[in-house]
Length: 434
Image (cartoon, rainbow, N blue to C red):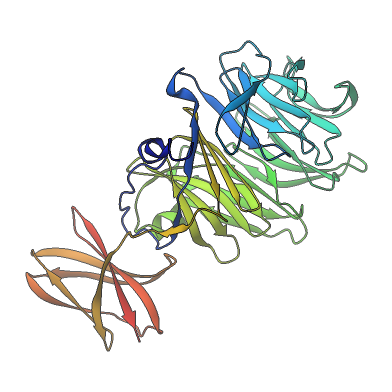
């Protein structure tokens, strides 16, 4: 079955990897296409997720499907929820319940074992399931725009508690120990001249009165997720301004915050334009997974973005992603058009991504020899192999034939990348300092 879908893997999931300016040297994980749900019937996928037994559940249009992780065959369908499509699906850790949003503000809950729709809730903006699979938390609004947090029993789906009154709550997540709830809510302006601000709020669930405002923002956020140890929370800040799009990581214990900004990522890739960032997912306590859409309309899923070191280790090139999930050494990827990709890192080898010209330039005494086939005015920059900028050499005229590039600082031993920009092109070359 894997061999049968190899053409799809190349043609749909792994589009030709185009050089993206000074793309950091990293390894590319090659994901095999497990199945393509849109091959015969057009539709939209709302996400694919691992089940405890190792198989996969995917929301396809308005009907969840269970797929064999080895063959890619659909062997069960759950009941339709009678909608155009569903989004933002979540599976309880015990594998008994599936929830998803339909029609913008309705939450549907399925029993995965029987396949039946159990209940539909209205006025839902965001929801989360506790890690022990016992409670469902819902945030929404009413006609006045205010909404309480509703807590439901996952077995009976009956409401057991509600608390608070929050204006326009949108995103919600609960810590792994069940002690802290994170909310993205709007603060009502004091008067008509105030701008509506977005607040990130932490609630101590032991007393439900101890609220901590982490941040107040002028724009909204697109996600909310705790790290596996519950000590950090990450979200994506949205804005119409290019300079104001970033991933925000907040440490609950130390109160420190870290930002992964558009500007930082743009510099990492040779100062390209970045159209958008995707919502971040924690792979582990020090690693985030998120996607970047460059100015060339290419998506790059960064795998293992080290929060501490601010660097990329792996990435997957794939377009039109909806979600990606990791479990131990397995990676599951789902596109909007129903391409389900699967990678077992114990079986599939990691391939080097050759994004630079492999000819090593000659380096000696802070001088590089570069041979050009044209004359132009170019600007040179030095990066290390993780994509970190070391120094900007600055503009200089290049002539046909041999050119000497003088680096304005001594370099430590290792492999580096030289990028040369002119008005129409950028090339990257490796060189070694011994």
